[in-house]
Length: 129
Image 1 (cartoon, helix red, strand yellow):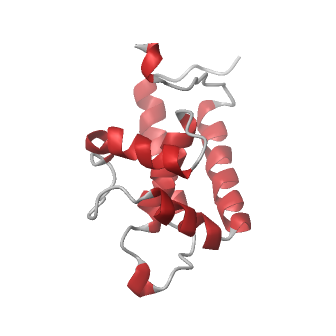
Image 2 (cartoon, one colour):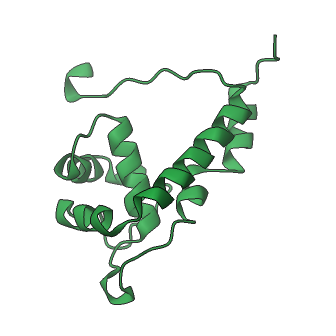
């Protein structure tokens, strides 16, 4: 049986290969003049929102507005939370194969660090309080 790692050990190892670093490697297909929000910030916001149960671009924006103070602890967000229209435009031009490849690479790194152990998650809603 593999040795169980402490939460701090896992955090240290995961911080060396954070999801933000992986997502930052995806090429931004947008024109420079249209980049009000960074691709990395938009993708990390979307990932956090989807993990918490967001099911569309409006829900991602709503999550961002509700959790903006927390998100600013690790994202730049110089122009605030992107609108649902902006999020939709980003995903419309993003290369899905590039996103899939980067996400798979990150998940493989997480699986290596955790020894393949499962972390249970469930969506948070306002009713869960």
